[in-house]
Length: 469
Image (cartoon, rainbow, N blue to C red):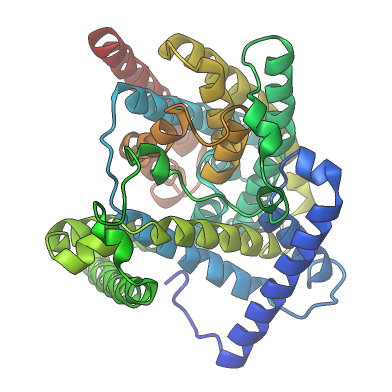
């Protein structure tokens, strides 16, 4: 069972927590002294991760943490993040623009999957037979879905003999972060220079506390919370923080325990059946099942007054941001350099071409789909589809400080549509490995299915655009 085999001793957990704390403190200090890092919005979480990677067992061997333990943390932090997001109540309903955002995300990850598969398959046929084409399909996971999912799925593929797949996914995710911030900031500056958007004066008034930490912003629920209300009008803000934390811990523990029971039961049912080979994939999608259980739990318990206040408390936004920061840092530190050197060239080429196709698909899609704020939406979606939600929102803040436009809100709400539309991708990319043993027929079939999937998504999007604008 991926992420559940073995236990980490308490002393190791404490040591790793102290290491992470020291790395984050150092990263905050370094970022506060570097105008270049602040100019390109490089977050402290990414700096801390790179410091840990350099000082850790993969390179300098100064700090004695284990990359396997970091991968363990990533696996569970990803699930915990999705649980808190699933428990968090939203005061807004997704409008048509949020659906368009979901379609942009879905189209981009499908094209990323086709791009990565084509490049790795070409290398497999023309250059080196030891290169597995499956690794190319980790590109949309590392770029469009984040390091946690890339690691989780890549680790499950290692059970099928694809050595170093987890490291490949993490490497692509790390490259995606650099693309999101470096290319993203360049694109925003170019757009401002070309008059596509005007920088607002409040951008220069951002406080030093915004610039110094470099930690993830709260996911902008505040942007869709409606008018500001007083404490008397909004009694949930009076709920003591300690109560929120205790209640939230109980809810998260319950949801995760139920998730584990459901996955354990499903894996037992799959034993001695044609689906037995899919068990590693089942456990790699731990985050998805946790999210579904969390949503069901919130819906079923949301009528209880205390829990309703917990689910709508702004503290949940900060918890999501903290989990995302630690997830990014541990994901970079989990890179163990176990991947064969034969993968270096195709992975670099995949990331370069992946960057180009993502840039143009997101740019052209936002121009076509949105009547307002098209460039701001491009900046946010490009940052997200190469990095994470946090990197996308960081780029939005460059031209929309305070999230005064609906762009940030729609980008967050569009994640629901993207999750629904993008779920088949997580199943399709596993087919060549689990059902066809890595044969060429399997990769050809999944390429055809991905093409059909892309066509169906585009046609559905055109219908929504014609029908609802």
